[in-house]
Length: 156
Figure 1 (tube, rainbow, N blue to C red):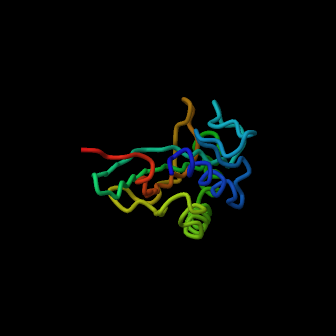
Figure 2: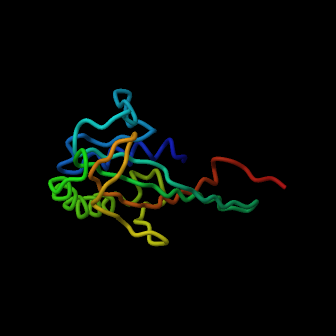
Figure 3: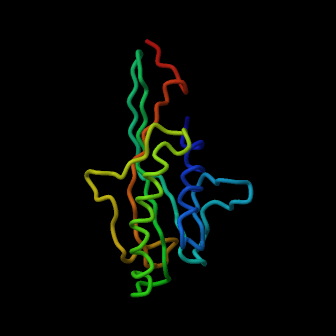
């Protein structure tokens, strides 16, 4: 599989979170009607899903494994306001439960797990910038593991 395959599934799963009125968006849209990443935020709460970094390991005998660090940001209000903090906190449990229940993202990955080190699993709520504007939000950090052995060959 590839990021183009599992990212739309992740977007769909996150978009199903209760109270996420603005839905979820990523650079790999989940459907033809999905506009992808918005130029500005207008409806809250909304989740933005971004690849943060990645690691790749392969050899001639395999397996070829790819690890993607993903940041899921839930924006809850324009500016840094108390109401935005109150809306953000319940998403900690909702996110944990939703992705634990969808451990393999409908079979598109080996696993999606909260990132353990070097960062925390989540940060916030607090001020987060998007497209040059400041919002109240909470960030979640996950690592996606996939076996990409069938996607390319390693030759000597």
